[in-house]
Picture: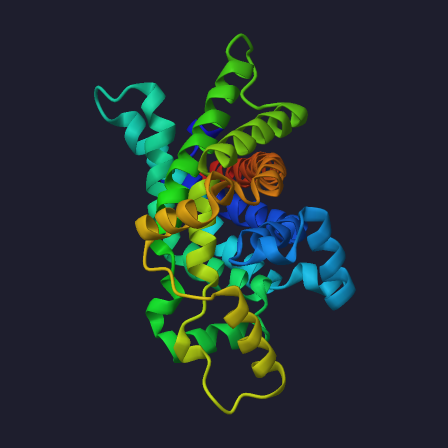
Length: 325
């Protein structure tokens, strides 16, 4: 079906399907992501004994709403960034497939890299706001956004950008390439062009878990850089929710990390190899579920949109034929 429509239309359909998939999966799996973020934040080992302890304490202190801190930023950011990502990914696959002497096996990773670089401009600010709310910063997504810009400037929205890019590039390349290779394997000896639902879910789960396993150390670094508080955020005169937020962020960030390399080194020195694997269980589980639901929702939505689009084009062509003498 994809070959029956122009590249611009394919890109638009993939972008729309990607936005639907991103928003749906982010909303569904946000509590797991909250647990992962709290386990990776600095000082978490002194507060939580594990994933279930995080859930128990969050429910006791904040109720169910505590597991959904930052969900608004996550959904909105995922819709936009996923639309950009999948649209660029679809365009990238077409471009790299048409490049002479480009091995077919290289097309998925190259397209995934292009999509990641393009979508990171939206993805990183969304992650910063979401993770600061998950780590304890009070207020709505809009308030956290404004406070971050006021205290740290626009650059504050891109805290941990290099770590996010270093994590997301290999993570997405591994995830999308693994899914594409599995998809080719499922369809190799078949005349089908579309995966069965269970095949999409299984392939997505394997791809997500594998990519998360490999890139967890970089995810820990990204979380530390994004959740740390700058000293300028702890201004005098705060009260109520602002004072509570300042106190929490001060505990979470005892000092400021300087960059990816220094953060990796500091975690290794202070916490050992275990520090670089914090949150690996929840992250692998989250990534497996995210990719399973994400790829399934994307593939299903894209097929539906393609069929509707082709039906509409066919109806328009029939009307045009009737009008012609």
